[in-house]
Image 1 (cartoon, one colour):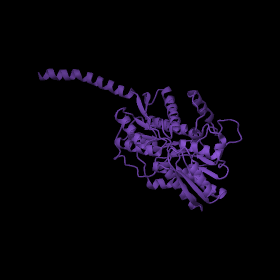
Image 2 (image 1 turned 30 degrees about the vertical axis):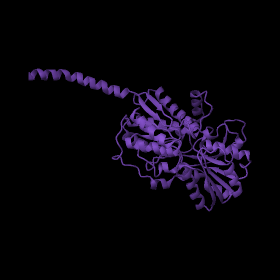
Image 3 (image 1 turned 60 degrees about the vertical axis):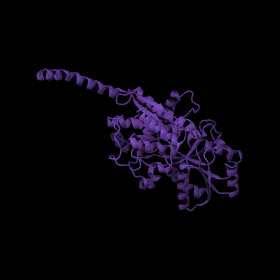
Image 4 (image 1 turned 45 degrees about the vertical axis):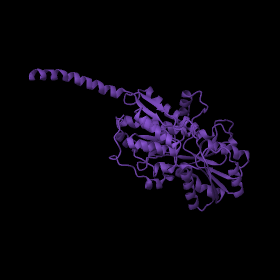
Length: 419
């Protein structure tokens, strides 16, 4: 009986091995699912749509050449509604029900922070593509989270000092009343005061504001030399329209810390008063930019935005860099991919910017060129909205304070996750 049992076990062994190899092959070739955590409603719905288009173009390019590690890339998208509580629920659902490998997307910093807390708990790598509060790579940083946009400190450092010398020292702050607005204005205040300016007033702008009449009346009564606005999304679009209608655009020096393309696309150029920061523009005179624009137009021939902007650019590069890191790691194991992303450096000619871009391993924020722009009133092209007036190299505008406040979790305290 014992010999017969041994023979049966030996006969079954090759079958078990074959079944194991087949299961392993299936695991290697099953789709890799990425969760897109971008807004489809709320203040940043337009930016969320542009963000997704950038992610999807990168995924389309990878799938066209066989996916990543032999696995086709699929996506699931759930609207985060520009609401932190919804963002948290969406992240939990994507991880527990949809078994996503990675999470990508955000414009609101409050939403990004909520998603990243859930992602860290599970060990799921999360790419914050487009929210730019300094806290995202500062006190709210996480080992699994990587921030791809410039933040309020980067943009403020590129604009504040020159603005004081050019326009004057009496400054007023217009601040969207949520985490990004508060943190961006706080950075602007600190830099302005350090360079000799006086903040004469700060006016809070509730999210969802569409009537700016009382805010603008108060602004006129105060009469500052410079107005630094940290107002985003649809709120900013409404503000710009009403400022232009009242003829206030040329009356004051306006600095908008950052100008996202979806927030202003379609506005009259006269509404683009002041100077503002961006990380990319489709008319940069650099090799590869025209081809990038053509690829966008071929993939999205019917979209309202006929040319890509900075939000699309960030969504694309975050996704592409993640998938390239997976390829280089040779695995989807989160610890291995995180280590690859922490070493990321992209040459300027590949990145389509003027300077090499690189990931700061201490804060997980992408260090990149920041451009200052103003309205391009000289062109009849309705898409050619910006005129780039200056640029700053990454090391000259780095957020050193974030390196002090960011405390990344250890790898030992970050759960292993391998989709």
